[in-house]
Image (cartoon, rainbow, N blue to C red; front, side, top):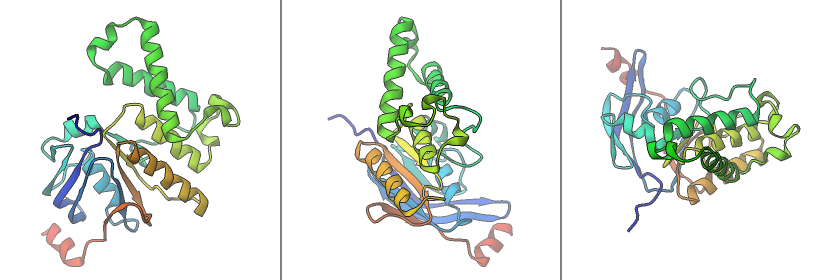
Length: 242
């Protein structure tokens, strides 16, 4: 039987200690492939650090986790190959000076050069271009973004996008690599109630299509697997500094 596309995610007593104390600690949960996981908590509770740790971008100091059968933190490099980041401030932000088309072209080029099997580089150029366009079109459809509907079509600058449009573009860029795990930070930040519903519907549709989704938020929707983070206690901070 073919294994599911999405990556199962499991954590046990997962924790990360930094110079100022514990970013997060005692995190434990299990999510099957194709699950929408909402990482809920207040700002400063370690939500983003947990997101980056589960995608192999930060090395933890306590406990362990598994993503798609790959153990963290030992196999972080392998996890990075199957996990893509959507919008994460200071890590994977959109360039406001780029247009939508420029972002898509750049990501498709990088995917074709570094993310595709070596044998694919031997195919005729026209065939490679057609495959890249198909990937981009597929990702845009999954993210619910139609560049033709934007004010200047694909020539629209990122700085001119609305918050929800920018989120859709970030998700589309991440999906070009067909990841098994998609991670999104600040999902519900600066969104109206209506936009928040649309954002969660987008991420739910990605998960329903088979990709596991990790989404940081201040308030999780009802249909998500919720993982809560909380600020560390004074005792834990003192322990971290001792």
